[in-house]
Image 1 (cartoon, rainbow, N blue to C red):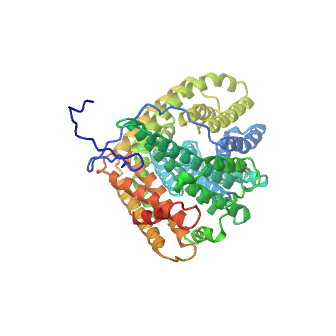
Image 2: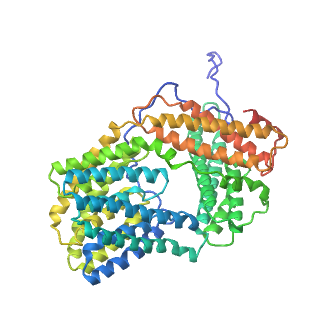
Image 3: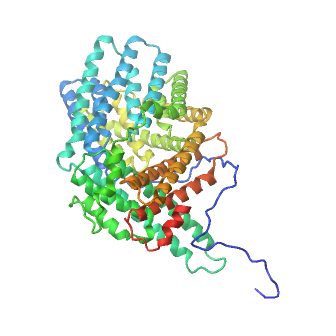
Length: 594
């Protein structure tokens, strides 16, 4: 550029202090309905084989016994209990015992309502209405308790299908007894791994936190590298992309650390848990101060945990006094269930309306199994409309491919009842092995399995089954998604305001403690954990609200500011506790002032 043509200098922030991108205030970007990436396959779950093997161990013995007795028509009731083995594989065994017991009771309760309704009325409209109300209750309770996959879908499948099985009152106790008996067997299957690895779930959760923290450290280093040595006007887009990547990695690491703490809080106290707590503190340190952390060390610790080696003991051990906030957290009661159910009212209303309308539409079209449309609608509802749309696409694609798989497998299943049982067992395994990669891929196995289960009582016409399943899939997906748009969730914005306020208060509380010369023992640790929990909740709430329709403008700038200041304060608490070498004495004071 010639000196004879002066240009007004364009101010540009330096690479270390550039402000984040902030959307215009008052503008509410409407969520789109994406297609790209919806069917993309991800990495399988680290423990995909656990639910896959557990469901085989829980389903096979009852089905083989019924086969030997010539009573495969009772398989619906035994599978109700056996499928409980799919739940709680990420929970410590002390907590898993309680959760599985509640799942068995919940499954049996839903089955009892369905069987009583089926024995008292033959009206399909009434039965669809009962099924929709059950689906809404199951959705709300599973979300409020954060049950985890497969959440409400399996419960709704069993209760909805049972509504349309001919039933008399005198048969109900026996059928419920079968479900309870096989549910007890599923409980034993779920608890059996404790004999070999009694601390397996908490070790995996800690390893995941360490690996996620290492990924955050790498992303931070990549962002710092992109910002160094750039010429004027060069690398601006690259730095922005690196900043977005670092932000995502930080959010993922914060969520993993939070999940690890929740897992440890649910585990039995002991030296093993104490050692894992010290490692999670190391992950917190990496989250708060990535520039001072060696990611290779974090990954080595994670590898040892997953390999069943002794729990690593870092050279710079954390004193037990610095973990007193963990014990204090155990004494804090959880939010009452009724308070957790309140914000879920719009989701429950969507589920009830969508399932009912889908079932009624199926009846109007003359389909003999309206519960397929009902279950399709129930499986769609996620945290917001955008995610519900993605699930609808995945469900439709998975079911379409699944009916083709059924057409290929049905000749084999018709060879003998034993072949039918074995094919269903193989599909059970395949569904759990594949569904963690993408929901549609698991549905490819679930769809033919659901179709073949209808043949346990008697052989069906394959052509009619395929036609009815295709119709019900499309009806359930279209009507279910329409209900998610019609029933607005304006509480999403209110929840975001509450989450923002919680972060701001937690940050202010932590900052006040940092300003005190001698805070109470464990106070800073407890405040640090409370702030980290609030930040994780804020990110999840903001993501959910951003994908919701018919919302007022979201305070995006306030969210960005709260997250940045919150993470700066987290770093300051780490330095104050002496968990990290404070290379710059002025950094702590600056963080507190911010």
